[in-house]
Each structure stands twice: as structure tokens, then as C-alpha cells.
Length: 162
Image (cartoon, rainbow, N blue to C red; front, top):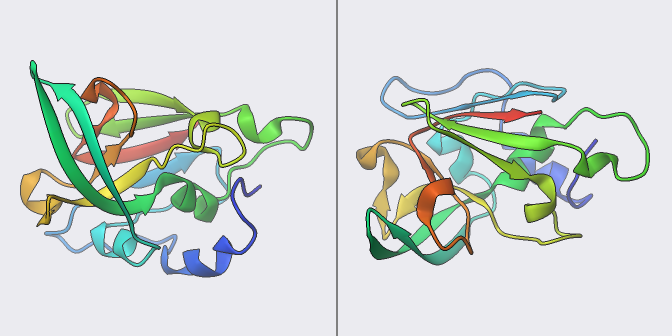
């Protein structure tokens, strides 16, 4: 089941199910309740429609502002195709767990970023303030609107649909 817009599938063909990451390019796995496990890297994410967001949040005791560039988490999940029984509200029954290489993990509700509900532009970012995140520990999930940066996951390694 796709949870986004019908026309997005053609754009999402660039994310292949087989790993394509180069040894020096950070990547992550999308798995769980999906039809197709994905192993995209930064180059794969850069092929998706580009979203730029300016965010401000508290981290390490001070306010930080940054401009991130990346692709919507929703676009990546649409490519993986969330598996669910049909029925009223079925697209909103899942939680998305996002994990970093150090074991830190957070959960997001699909309703937070689904365009029919809250519609946050949650990103899988590959650039911060014009610099590639590869040099800063890998890809990052950015959750705009949070007052604290606790759900902005650095060095992304896994997105699991539960």
C-alpha cells in the first residue's frame, strides 16, 4: 500500500531494492512491514525530488539553526511499499522506527508526515548548510517543528516500519 500521492511511484524508481552503496558512501536499510527491503545510499536519495528546509531546535544546551537538503521520508517509504491489511485507517496503523549507528532510535507516527494529516516534511537529509553529511557522520533524518533536536537522527542506518 502506498501512503503518498499516486504520481510519485514513477519518480521513485531510482531507489533499487539491491544494495548499491559504495564503500565510502553512507547508506541505510528500510525494512519491516514493507514489500521491498531497500538499501539506499546518499546518491540514491539525491535522485529523489529535492526538499530544502530551514530548521531551528535546541541541541546540546543551545539553539541551533541549519538548512538541510534531502528527500522526503514519505517518498522512500512509498518505494518500499508498506504492507498492511486493507481497511479504514490502515495507512495510519504503523510506527516508523529510525535508528543510528550508535544504537539511538526514535519513533514517528505516519500521521505526523502523511499529507492528509499533519504533513510535516520529514527529511532524509544528505546536506547541511551546503556541506555533504557524509563528512559529518552520514545521512540524517530531520523532523521539522520539534523544539528539541532529539528526533533528528544522525548517522542513519535503519528505518523500520512496524
